[in-house]
Length: 298
Image (tube, rainbow, N blue to C red; front, side):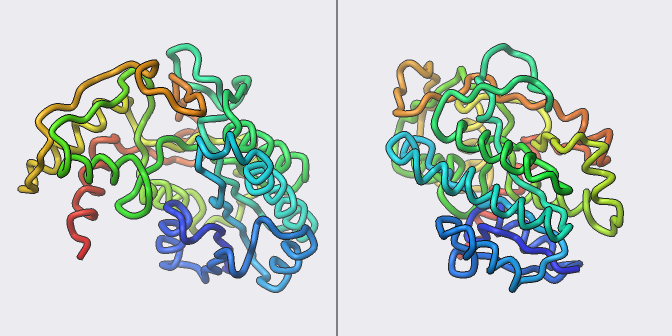
């Protein structure tokens, strides 16, 4: 089985490629091989040369604030390119897994978002990802849109690594406490996808059973402030010297950013369990594993 994975220099793409190496031939479609800003015929030609049996597309423009100043580029990478990939996949009968985000929702309310709830992105990044979902669905092939949230890893640029660094540099950290979600490690996303798809010959049927959309995130919920506290506490418990004496909770209003963030990023995981048999691991357990991975780095 030949699985093409996009964005393999990113957090999710790299984790997926490593995980699927165990049971498939992984085609690592980095930018040199598959440039998502290229013309449609060049993207299609690259896919034709690769001859994948399955495509997993985690590649995305993820700079949420910068997207406000670069809407055309965000739209190209997050909406136009996935549509091109989806149309090629549909024409060649290749199942496509497209990774999306909780940012397609407006963040209102306090209950977890279900897959069929109305979307309403509040920033350019979220709007571009929603447009990408629509383009993938409109292509008409066998596809699954996998929405996840608050992704982090022991590598790359993310909240987890930023807090781990600042905890060593600053006495006080100020972190918002009114945005609620579930921190989800890239490794867990990769493991869950592997469990969903390994040794399955009925991918199109499974995609249909999931109505082509599934939410994939860690179990439980927290806020960014409590997540930051857990990171600092985890470092201390592992003998890492930290400078931070206080992690101070603040409202979003006191931490203005160019792009609005949804306050409610909870995702309903019922379909993940029911259709694919994946039991979400608690976010605390995933954090512990990722802390160990971070500290094991040279």
